[in-house]
Amino acid sequence: MLQKTGRGLLALLLIVLEWTRPGLPSPLRPICDLRVLNHFIKEALDAEVAMKSCREGCSLSESVTVPQTTVDLDVWEKKNALQQAQEVQTGLWLLQQALSLLRTSVTNTALHSHIDNSIRNLLSINAVLRSLNIQEYTPPASAAGLEGTWRVSSATDLLQVHVNFLRGKVQLLLSKAQACQQDVS
Image (cartoon, rainbow, N blue to C red; front, side):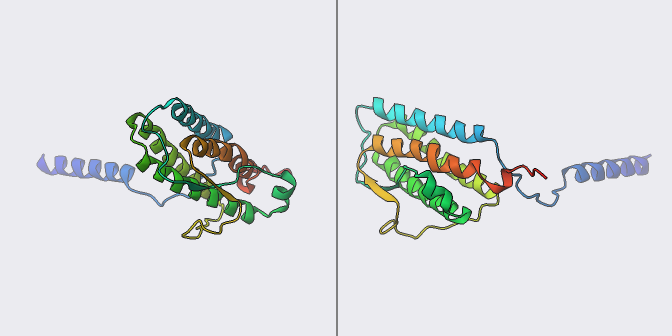
């Protein structure tokens, strides 16, 4: 009887192990639904609104470099996909650096969750870019001398740039990503 129970437990254990066994990691599936980006934009808008209503402890300690948000569509479309991706990734990096500085500058704890969420969302957007097989680009260690940037000195300006960058260049890049284009053959 004990031998039958032992074999039964062994069989059950093997079945459970088979179900829970880690398989080969599958490649990321492309995230082509722009509702994901729209969610990030909405949360960036929420952070901007919260910052505008803040009265104390919500200033930026020093000016920061941020990406230009204006887009000349003729110029944008003449760039190849790699150039567009590098511009977006550089902008995301600049925004992440600027928001991290804002997080340390702001003493209003109610804003901390908005800023933390904005930083997490920028990291998520980078994960979305990886899922679309967009080549990862590491910007230079310093923002000094980067093209297509400017400086802002207020927290509300920074958060407005954040929203506009997501609505502009990030949305353009994601909407035209090769991994999301349907084959029409």
